[in-house]
Image (cartoon, rainbow, N blue to C red):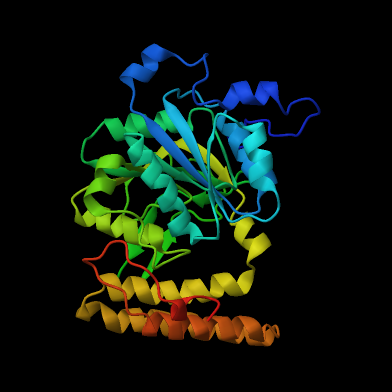
Length: 352
């Protein structure tokens, strides 16, 4: 029987906060092997926090137990109002903490961390969701795979749901520009070893997006037009178009609590709005004329299905969010394949 239980103890124990934790996570920890650091690529892990003290703390604790040594952590706080940046900064003094004055979204917040990583001459940048817990060897396995072929530019681990921990959240992904959507292979399936081989993919999820710094310098930062969701699909397309390979690494494993910050802080209407809006923006940026009939069919089916379901349940605010997203996606102006990192107009935001 396969053991899918999370091997990292993230329980909160009296007396654990303080010196022990500080030693575990300091980027310049004296226990790190200088010989290994000199021969392995430098990785900067970028984590966003948005009013998510508990989940971010558990993520950082799990990272303190990994066996890869040549890494640093940049924690970007996206305008939290719950005191979490102060608490996390005090508990993890070895982590670089950057505080944004307001919520810049997944794209803008991560771009702040990515710029810092490039300034620090990182060889790889890992965008890691704060609602994840990682296996001790997850990063070693990713880097080993990335270093095996210079054409590999971006990588993902195998990702399980945190609960139940034997169910797959992501085991490789594909992107269909004909439908305008990305999909996860194996989603919600019990893992029985059917996705245990590394494989080239066409979609890398932003949950744990490892990318070589040379790729970022070639294709640019995340496109801030997307704000939340679809930015990973856009980055995947741009990387593949630049000639790089995307790889799913089955031997690297993490667990995902799935959108904890968004569920807690923004709610369902927020996700409905951006799912529709960004599906349209992604198609406008990358689809060719021959793709549009099937893109529009896919969009129509999705809107019809969700509108019917929400209406039956009396969730009419969510129906409104869908159609505000439709309007925002159609009227947004700053979309161009030649502009990898544009700015969004106010009229295309959820607040409009």
